[in-house]
Image (cartoon, rainbow, N blue to C red; front, side, top):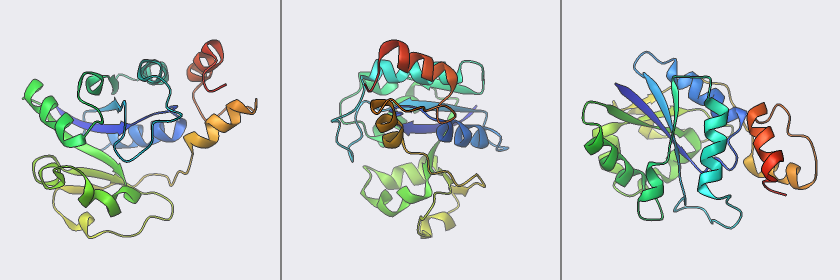
Amino acid sequence: MNIGLFFGSFNPIHTGHLIIANTVVQCDDIDQVWFIISPQNPFKKSGNLLNEIDRLRMVEAAIEDNFDLRASDVEFRMPKPSYTADTLAYLTDKHPTHKFKVIVGQDNLKNFSRWKNHEVILNQHGLIVYPRPGASPSGLTELPTVSVIEAPLLDISATFIRSSIAGNKSIRYLVPDPVIELIQARKYYQ
């Protein structure tokens, strides 16, 4: 099975994430997209990060009716911060019949050379790149292991969503209704 891995904090998951995942799973060579909830991104501060279990619950609620999408807590049991290369090695060992590709926004390509074992990621797995507003072109997109997909240009910010919640403003249409229900019931980001 060919799996696209969508790494992120998903703090919270929003419709932009879901549109990208759904677009990727429509690609001819991808069977499923797995959301890898990262407990801690090595390039981000964890200051306003909701508990990883709560973020996993929100992802599960957002994708519960789509069998092409899965939520994964694989990084919860790995050393922190999480490194994509380590997670890929673990998943490849655990699922030897699967092929994994990393889904990444075009804006992340400028720092891709700073990723741990970025050459291994490129050579053994490959990237699926989706467009991002204002992203600069990258020579990486010319490599045979890098696929650039057509997808809507989305600029939905989880920071904006959290700020809206804290300000008691509506986040309708920014996140799926089951996620809104979880956020309200558990008072996330308030």
